[in-house]
Image (tube, rainbow, N blue to C red):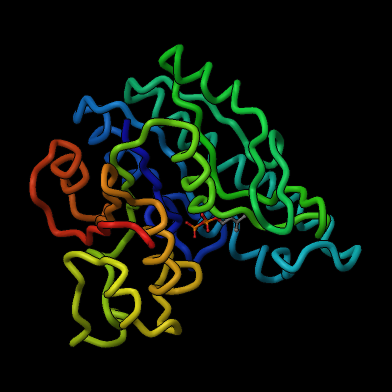
Length: 259
Ligand code: IPE
């Protein structure tokens, strides 16, 4: 089974609050369907989550009454986004159901806890894809906090037998600097722990919460001898489909894991 994250930069316009990229999502759902692969999809929040989360500092946890309406609004907005994605999946012939993490699970000091995975497993056994997404989640220590789709991906690799993890973003791969501001930035074809040690931890790239360094670290944490982890550009038509069919495409592959 493959695990795919549709990043916020590909499913939304990150600069405009609540702008959904319907055409891109529809095309990506069809590419996934046409690949015939067994997949689980997680998605980010993009401008349905980050705009208000940043404005009200929601990742800091419960600090003031003013945050509370914003928590409810972000929960509403990301569920709204999720319904549009689940609709596209079902319409393209992939039976899917929303499993909002903030309504089903809690966190402890920003770490997602899935004590009972029965619902997730039973949906998958039935042939229905449970779709989770970046959300505001109740936190035992902080009151609430932001849960990223990336962290959900990591938990899901513990629950399901995943042989490939794919991050679909709006960049061709991981670069040694931001390619949007530095035209001579070089792309990594593959990364391993040694590459991680040579990367500056302060480079930021859109859709990469925490920058390239954190993304690479998360990718390496999720890969192992039996599982590769790939970053691919979803704006390039047909690239995700080719990748899912096992063809060679422009992308960054993380290999070897973190020791
Ligand atoms: C963020 O999730 C969740 C919220 C801001 C509520 P992600 O970190 O997975 O979202 P993207 O992919 O960066 O948009």
